[in-house]
Image (cartoon, rainbow, N blue to C red; front, side, top):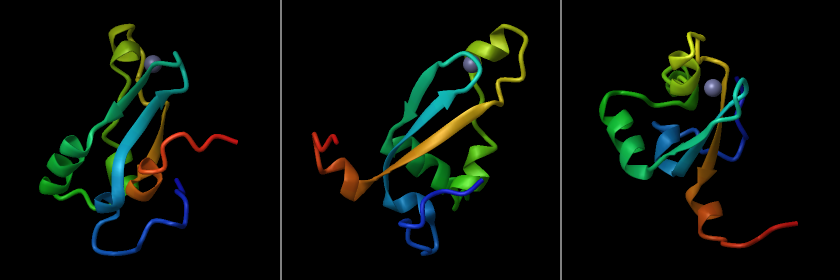
Length: 88
Ligand SMILES: [Zn+2]
């Protein structure tokens, strides 16, 4: 998986994130991870979106007997989160 090139290649990709959207490609269920949860993940040693991405599962699909692994994650950087509205 590749994520935008704007994320600094510092020690941790996660520290530049404001939050993280998680969308299930199977059922369309959407969720998000707050900064606090990202902090917890960092505390557990996650340093990249790629490693963290393997952690996400769609609970709704798991409940239905699916793998729940067909999820997309979309990171929102701190600088983007500050620009409210935006739109195109
Ligand atoms: Zn799902």
